[in-house]
Image (cartoon, rainbow, N blue to C red; front, side, top):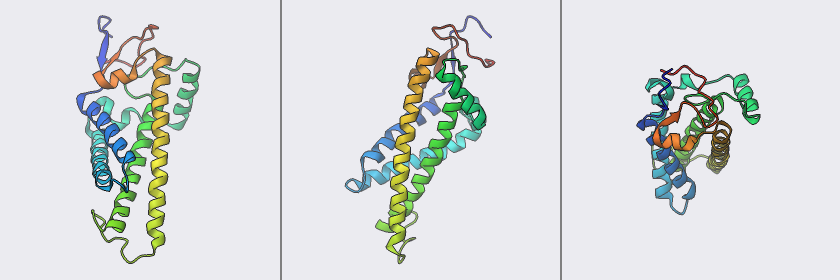
Length: 202
């Protein structure tokens, strides 16, 4: 490890732009709906496009953007959370077990909410790629899709709440500003408590 090095670049511009663009469009989609359907649909398309890109980037992007770098077994996630609550969890250069699991959960949830939204849009408005797919069917199916879309919206709000709370708590526990890292792209090699990152630096 280079002892003269104070910070390491972890999040390249592509990941940072994706992250904050997703925050923006998810917020727009959440705060619009039937009354502002045009904006809701456009925000939904933007979210889906971002998620498709992120899945691609998860396989072909740089080291810390890849799924292989933050896909952990449940036992590891549980152990990390237990250690985090006792302020003993080790730091990670990229996503830790909790953060990585949250990314996967959000991506899966956003994929499903996008699909239900597109099907619902096609059924109710006869528009979009699934236009007419529910035409002539029982109102039950449109209602069921609407309920699923709303439940998933609630789930995403819950996940986002846990994500923000987890980021704030981990920032406090590790003595580093994780939000700043997602803005600047850099993480300190050592925190104010002089705890080094416990992964081999490139």
